[in-house]
Image (tube, rainbow, N blue to C red; front, side):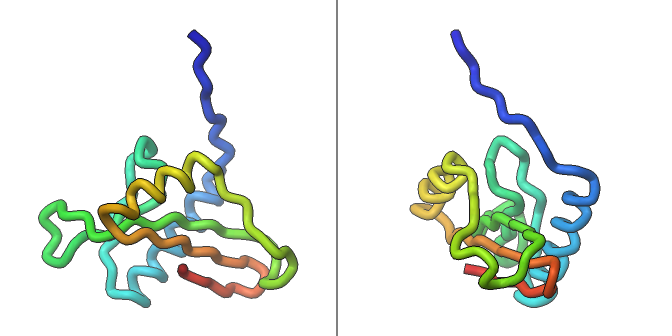
Length: 108
């Protein structure tokens, strides 16, 4: 049987940047974020009030080199989008987009 596999292209610098953005999101929103296992296809889970393993949301973090307005769209893996749509039936989902050039962040 044919099996599709994804090649991970994240570098150590990418992962460090993602952790820094997650820390900023925690501080700004009062969230407690837990890194999600790769099988869940999102970057972080938002821990529910009081912790205890209750997941209150999921968040995907994207960091881009350009400025807002340089490009009319963003690129996100279709499988990831479809998975987040399934999760949305149960918990809120967020997409955080950070631009490195001007250090701006948008969460939707």
